[in-house]
Length: 161
Image (cartoon, rainbow, N blue to C red):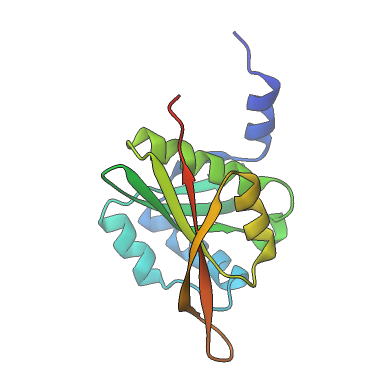
């Protein structure tokens, strides 16, 4: 049986593989371009060493994005989802998010949580379109250029296959 149009479209938006410590220099370059307050090399390294599911989305030439999950019991948490800024707006983030949700379900998660900055309307729109709902706020959660910024807490129930 051949690949479906959906399979071909997903492959055109990159392929997934587990993140390795050897990827961290590239991941950090993207993280610094994408965020004014990036994660550190040590945070990524610690996530890998702790066994958190961490994935790279890539094409034949470069890393397009990456994501890190934590999964415990029947819940997952998207800790970091980042797309190379030059690749944003092409559906790459949606592809990676859906892959992370499948991975979370494969680890037994029935609900997925994440935090997002209110100042990141593109991410909020993506999460909303993918079925996440705002369930609360974490006051002063993120560092900001002036003071701190709240986090919008969002959640999605994963349906049985």
